[in-house]
Amino acid sequence: MPWDAVFAYLHLLAAGVSAALKVAEHWLLARPPDRLQVRLLGQARLGYLLAITTVLATGLVRLQGMGGSPVLASGSSLFAVKIALYVLLLLLAVPTTGTIVRWNREAHSPPAFAPRLRELEALRATVSLEIGLLALVPLPAVMLARGAGF
Image 1 (cartoon, rainbow, N blue to C red):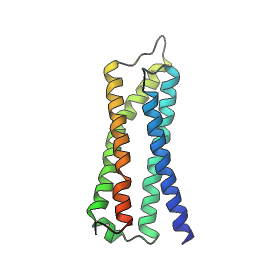
Image 2 (cartoon, rainbow, N blue to C red; image 1 turned 90 degrees about the vertical axis):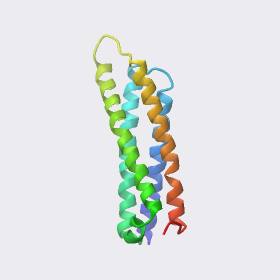
Image 3 (cartoon, rainbow, N blue to C red; image 1 turned 90 degrees about the horizontal axis):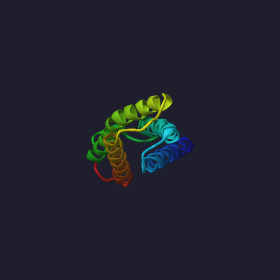
Image 4 (tube, rainbow, N blue to C red; image 1 turned 180 degrees about the vertical axis):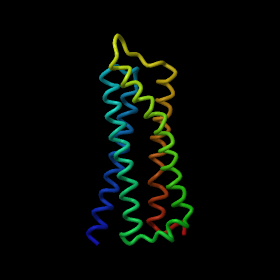
């Protein structure tokens, strides 16, 4: 029982950290980034990817070994919605991470760094969409915890 509480805490903590880092990315993209902001964007993105991986790992541990029933959860439409949201977040993270990595490389090369306005707007829109999707993830989770969707 104590391990279940520890993993539940780690799961929620990682979810909160991932949301905070996503908001930090959004804030860093409020204006065209300079070299320092691009470096911070890369660090925030790495932290976000680590946090979201931790959310998934602790969730799977809780589901498999901490009293959760994988058979019941995997047959639930709410569980499928939650997993679909995470898959969508992962699919959105791939191109945005590529853009941030490329910007980091360009920011280290002389003489001046300036991201293209179209790329910046697309990245802002994607990060905003990711924040919205992250905000939706707790809804099916809470409903599942209350016994709905079986």
